[in-house]
Image (cartoon, rainbow, N blue to C red; front, side, top):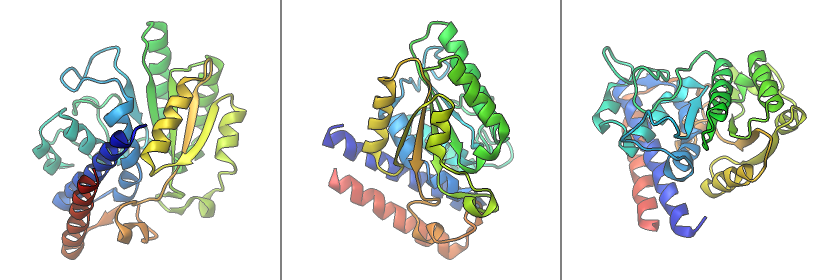
Length: 282
């Protein structure tokens, strides 16, 4: 990745965080922790890695993204709006009556959403089915899947992993948002996950472990995965839940938060400054 692309993606990630928090400011609450932890990944996917056309969101041979941890939909909506899939003012309607942007991803409501998700564990099966269907159709595309580390406690996820390896779905790239937390607390306190990269490797995956807030590392991992034939791919992202807002990062129970007026003002100021700083660097 050249330096200009890196700076551009860092600006994009900062803008995704800002617009995501604006959604929560408008609504007053929401799944902020796990939305902020995937902002850098979304910047890489929508900013460089994915073959997409916002003017033709149903183009059959496009790359597709399944966000199995569907509660992080607000971050995906921010990325989609910034890419021009729908007007920016839609973001202020998050989870309100009549909205096209429900709390969890819904492909029937939101342009650019490729799969309806939210029931944890089921998104993996959807992504594997899409990957197999596109492979059989002869499409030269990739299916990207984002799962949470807490979600890996779902047995259905591992059934999908086993199936995809057995069918050599090299067009499937799985990202694990390894932010070490789930709804009720820290992963290790609830159910220790053991060695996540080793588990995927044992199931027949090409596996990498990278810093999940470094856009260059994420992009290079995707490029490395595409060089490996006859295997699906897993990229485990070492992330921080709530990344970009120190107060959220440092809050133990940060899966979903109710925002105070002071927090709204402070976080908006903080993230606006972060965008301006990144733009100056670029």
